[in-house]
Image (cartoon, rainbow, N blue to C red):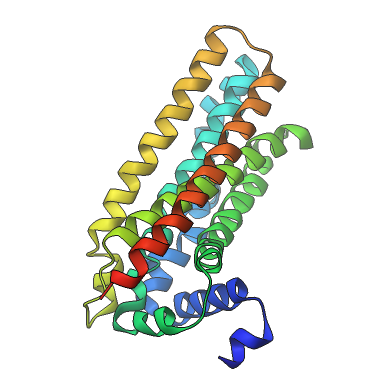
Length: 250
């Protein structure tokens, strides 16, 4: 209660959630470590093994069609969000202590916003590390680095909200080992499938945009607009749904 009074409710929820992620080894390994593992696989490993030439196909794609390459990079950044189970286990990780959050006078929007900040912070750190490392191999102008970065980051918002809704629908609260909340939680797989459908729909639209030869700037603006509208719609739905679901969770 003291924490809630000293800062906005959503900040309090975020700080509590993030501290639990950092101090619980299972959560640290399965959720936070992706910030290190993904850049390590795609950036550090090629440097350590001397296989930097594995970037040759990517460089070739950039030289052949920069605009298509940037859209692919943006999609890849969104996929990194999909691989992180933080959002789709946000309620499950509370376990039997979830009743505490339920009993506090926290508004529904704070529940939603506070719980997606953690996955978004991790997503931001991941794509930032990838972008900086990628620029070591492929020197691009800042604007060409920002395009996939911005689209990929914004794309993480609806994906995180979808994961949150999946976990809210069927939270795994009855566990004694925190490993069950993440590694043995079917919500992670369901969230991935739901997010894949969202990404596939966006990829399909971008393919259509390219086929009809839309201006690249217009495509990026359409992507940002579609992602923003999706985020608003899913956010509003999540507030309505948590109001219906929260009182019935045992």
